[in-house]
Length: 98
Image (cartoon, rainbow, N blue to C red; front, top):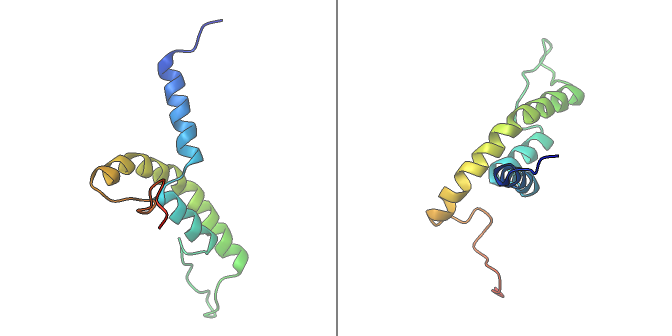
């Protein structure tokens, strides 16, 4: 049995960390999906809104398809945001009381 290479272990740990700590775009995507705000379905022929089941299905599928893109976006932009001074998770730092 061969030993796993350090690069493979680092990639695996990075992916696990990225999945364990979702960023701003991914959290907002999941919130919008839960509130049926990703895709707004047009009304039917009688100008009635679509059933809730249809709206939930379309938003769940759209959220599922967009999750990998939001995850990559968060991974790429997080260091840039921190470097530029924006705190994605707020300005509170460890050890501060207010």
